[in-house]
Length: 521
Image 1 (cartoon, rainbow, N blue to C red):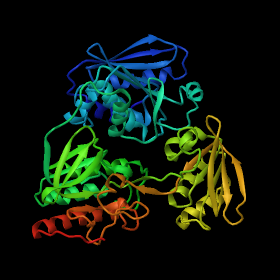
Image 2 (image 1 turned 180 degrees about the horizontal axis):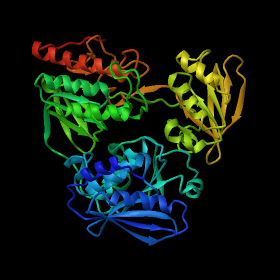
Image 3 (image 1 turned 90 degrees about the vertical axis):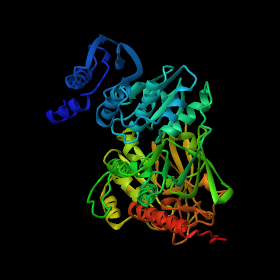
Image 4 (image 1 turned 90 degrees about the horizontal axis):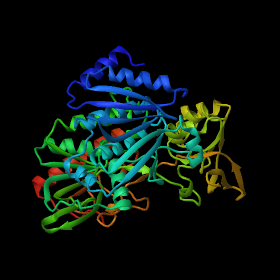
């Protein structure tokens, strides 16, 4: 299953393992995927004398990871290939303390403080690009806290289970049988949800206030650019982010980053992190900012989930944007049960079915094109009288026989019975309402700025975008903003990178000149 080149890479990857690891397999002799699982794990085991496997009869198909004979708390119910192959490798490396994605000591102290026992289950699709982030985060929590266990469940292999739960979106995380998360997420978000649900044995707080010349909030292209430019000026810099890459990490294909003809969001995010590691930047991932307040001497005090506090004279806000919701009746109720935001992740759930795509911009039409290869029928609804997508995308969508495009239409309600059954829409020209029977709804209506935590600090417009001038200054002295969270037009990676650099240079210039301002009323 694994080619010779990949096996050589795995041998190098596992060369320094300290402990002995066993894949403890339970699989039915009649399971149709038995040989595939055994071949995959056999190939992995062959790459290190520290790895082995043991096979037992079972009713389904699963295996747990043992470290020196002890259960790590990590289980896979499925075959971790595709995007989840990395999750398998990292489960071993993280158990050995060698994974590059292991959080810092402060975050781990919060994980270890969670009250147990906690049993977590994540349903995934092997084509989902967001699922590995969730699986890997929860595996780390299981490895770090003996009171936590986590199992990855491949929805395709365990289809009856998925159908019984009426799941139509992944990743879907259950905590002791209760659904707590659906869709894209990150370590910080999951940790906060578990702290709220189960509590902590001890309050993981850090009384020390950490002082920096520049604090950048946000790990996307704008934030990374700002951090690098600030570090190059010799300043003490911290970057606080829920994850490096931000929204970009979800992008499957990037072909408009000048001088890089083609890349992916995953690759670009990794390269951003690697570039920052060339400088003396404190990269503090899995941080969620809760509040920012102005304090004496024009400083800003930043409060982070878990009790950490940071103080700086120059704050650069680069928190980007998130998928915008319809905010109509039924939408929130059926997220993960027919309402989805990522066609790449959730599209396979709708094979041979009828789905709607809401939004006629580039993301909406690209989604329709992708889904047309999976679904029997795709209906696109656009609010305006014409599509906003690039002409080349419009032409492609219109050439597909199972894609229907309906303009000048408002979506008013998501209908369902435990899962989505239809969508109520209104013709904006005639006000006539009708119900369209369908199986799924993909919302693709753009992005909403992640600015809510800063709304009491800086001015925002009616869309929630932070107002900035041509130098990325806000209305508050010493506070700058860059990228998709701001009023700067055209939400593009290359523009965000430039804006991040500009914000950093403005902050440096104001620092050396001692500038204080109040530019926006």
